[in-house]
Image 1 (cartoon, rainbow over the protein chains, first blue to last red):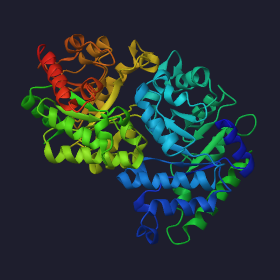
Image 2 (image 1 turned 30 degrees about the vertical axis):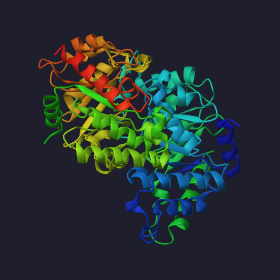
Image 3 (image 1 turned 90 degrees about the vertical axis):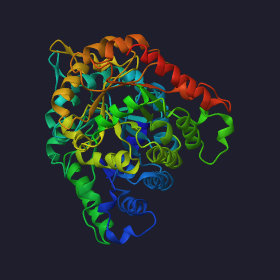
Length: 272
Length: 272
């Protein structure tokens, strides 16, 4: 099964475009879990069990695990193994924002796709298609490439003008036209930039976009959906993290996360 | 002591611009070390002990450690701890090529600077200065930002023309003029592009460049030095990995690595 089929199947099954970001920063995990041997994993497990029928993907960001060193990597692996075994139909997006030159990327490919069994990984475009071949050549896995990021200063380089286009447009066009021969590329487009999202959507109806920036970062959901949904009222993986996973920090946190995920799913589906 | 002072001190002490890349891919480590509990660490330790008086930095690339999962991260930490304890005067450049949005970068900052005690980390520029603040604000540590990478396809985006300049020039100029307020920025400029190196050097005499691409990647040393040395015949950290660390795969590998590091150091010093 190709990665696009896996994404479309789970969207259909769970009727959801919600991706839960497992940005499980240890300092923010509920106190009663912190004394456990593997607090990040235990936290994730409970979040996952509470939301698995409401999502189309989980997205652990490696930064929050690397911050804990070797032990964090172990807990990240435990999380991915748990997902792979218990919910094999739900894609894992490893939000690692990697990219090195050619062969060096083999190490990251091994880490993301073999060691962690992630289905997709986020990547920087700056080194170009040739450098990213070890990712792009993995036809069974998704390469999710940064195009328009959600941060306030995203425009410093991404808005540079090149022949009446912005750099982020050129990045989008190259990926759409040249990089996606295995039908395994996705683009990262922040919800905080709905006009840019609309512009990128106008260039491809079929490709999926990973959309961070809803919620804590201030992205507007209605505008995002109006700008980004494709002709099938799909094509977006809308990621939310803090507002769901840290909605509550008592023993009730997982039930509260479920409520927030459900709310987001239903809000999105109003516009589909 | 600032990071620039640390770099200048070791260059003076060892009279060397050589950085040894600890790209210690397990498959390439000499057979007799592979049965040890921590082959990457044991290999690195012997390479380090054989070359510590010949270098101005060590540069482990995280890809080769992440490929081994949790255990690789442990061996990377053991390597950095060994360097910090035994050779505290030699800077560690963590070649991690990271960059996420604002606060998420705190996780990578913790990983690179606190957990591993690296002195510098390599970063992608695509998200802009605002996103990289958690790195740039660490005035005691170096941010080594990708400007012109050494790979054959580097030009796909880096050579895009913006107002009669290439994107890599704009990146260089922003970093030189705006990002370097803490005097802790360096640029990555590949030895495989000596003309681009010369152009970037013309924009700053004082900043240090990390220069990969000599050796296995085919960069020409004489051209690199002619193009990149500053007015003090310094300003370059010339990284070489495979040609030094995998020069030999017998029990004699460390002595052979020393020979190669010495040869590179002396070749470079002919032009200084």
